Image 1: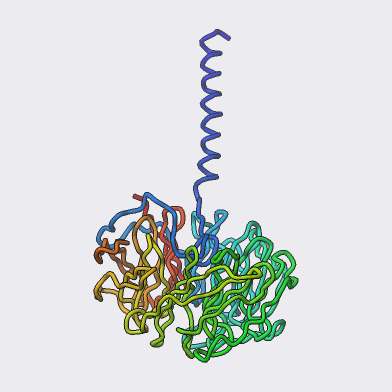
Image 2 (image 1 turned 135 degrees about the horizontal axis):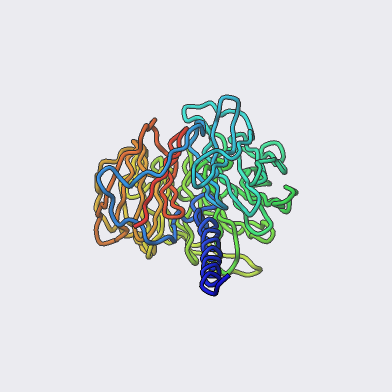
Length: 433
């Protein structure tokens, strides 16, 4: 074999090796979704992704795929480890479902409970992915831990039976479980078990938190919100909007730290609070309004909660679509069964935009990414809005196909894709610039 032929073979071998290496890299990096739980990695509804479309063409961004057969429900989705996780009511029960992130094909589906029959039927909670485990809460208050690869059940607890839990009103559980370190933290809403921390591997109880009646507004029991983590006042704590309002408990042992009853309503306290440094911002609907609480250090590892301001329900009340904090400003939808876009300065409560009408109708589920807001309206209109306190400015809109109102599931962005659950279907759009 001559030198030229040997050289050619060697070069060809190098090319194959490099190509194989690149192919492995591309396959490993292709999915890249990082939205492992309700409202994203930090539970604040804000994606850190960049390079997204600054505006949408007429008809919206290109669709990549649609998955069907998810069942009824308003659950959002989690995206992690190359898979998409959600919940839905099928004919024979309530399921946690895993799809392939690239194709939308079902990987597994595990029945976790009974169908929830109501005017707004189906599950509302979102699964939480933590490594090789997935956690979910069904509408009957079952907390289930599943194997992320196979869907096999690892353990189960029930908030009503095991902890005496109950809801503030009659729409059953809607919570998305929080995984923090070695714990799963949930909200039974019982007098002696307002919040509970469980070992994430076994479901064994670590602590339960006795939460007193915070005030007269609202009703006893769990709300429809989900727990967030705060380090306000220098103490790590779990903050939740419950039936009687905001409550904070110490993360290490569940000791009750503080509460605020000012915006609790007796129908449904729903939206997840937003935390920033020493601040907690919350809003509920049914005429209640909004509140900003400031936390400061106190003796013996406790904190003091001071109410900085409240906003009347005529100024800003958020039904269930949530709100986000960007650059010191709260953005969300205002009104009972409405999603009028508003911008509020966090520290002062000053309204930055005049009331603005757009083509969206009903409540608006809100998230943010790359300096823009994503408003998903009850009538199926998806809207892109600039996140700027100076003025309200739209950057595009389109209608989600085959909408069966109310269209409530919260939008998700992962790997520069926009995920929109619409009852039985999941529509995925390419929004990279």
